[in-house]
Image (cartoon, rainbow, N blue to C red):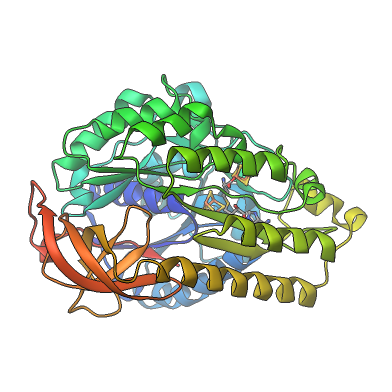
Length: 458
Ligand code: SAH
Ligand code: SF4
Ligand code: F3S
């Protein structure tokens, strides 16, 4: 048996792709190893969303070079950087053996055979056109004993946000037929999964035979599925039908990740996000009527070209007004071939120190809001789906509320149980408490030692 180490960067799409890679390689007798040091094959599943992600990949490649020198390990680069920058990788990193794009995952065994047999460098980054694309079907054993799992429902993105590289790296939107999604949800329940998150770069523009709202409702009806989540969504696709789904189906969890990107209409326009702040707030208000306890999270970019102090103040005020449960805020990073990178000189770059100062202010505000929102749970009893032992203290348990807040607690509920936890402590990022009861046990119990391992994500 040979060993493969896959280092995953970036978003949930890549985490999912890594699992499919690992399954494809098991057909060639490659088993996963948690460290690169004893690997015979090292794959970097890369992300190019911001420059930093690419830098991390390059420094990791530098480290893995030693393993190649010592053990003769093969090194492959997949994912979004591979798709967009194949020539640059091959030129700059002579010890990379193969480069493959997100559409070539199922060809991985064939690519590796070619590298091994012919000792040539192989490049496979062709797109598969929408009509002929077949989504890899997950092997449920890869998810054995996990309480929660991700299901890919679409790939690519048809939007044209001027800062974003994803349409260049993932191509056009292709939705997976709904029957396949439901089948995958059902197969995951046979290994203990009770919560699924439907993932895609833009899930609510799903077109796989039924609407996205219908897909959520149908997934919630799969026997054994207790909780349904999804990520990520574009505000312009937040339809009334989707809002109605939140009103009628309690198995759709009370969390909505709705990236706003900026609180200024001028910036939104240059970003080519086709909504105004008022429209965004109206959608959100309607959602909150349908599901009053919904936790809303967002993504924000600060320092977008031309962002003035007044523009940033509007983003700051929007954060205060919406009272997001959490946000991922980023400093703008120009990406190759994107509209904003090409027009940055015209719109005006924001100096680096100004960007950083804005980011720090926004993060401090969000932290204060998150602490306030989480503090309101102290003294309350919440329901969590138990995912395993706590990452910070192995003697405690870990799970998440319907609103997606992390809870670390004292108790003995097994993975997959729905437990009631009394909250005694709150920070900006997590709640702490003690188990008061176990509401429902998983239908399938897998000993914790046999639970499929997590993939390595940077
Ligand atoms: N499809 C999702 C976004 C996925 S990328 C959506 O439309 O919401 C995740 C986040 O990375 C984006 O929401 C954005 O906030 C951030 N991001 C994307 N491109 C960026 C760039 N060039 N610089 C900084 N942050 C960026
Ligand atoms: Fe990028 Fe916009 Fe598509 Fe999101 S919706 S992946 S930000 S182009
Ligand atoms: Fe990164 Fe590609 Fe995802 S650029 S965020 S890995 S789609």
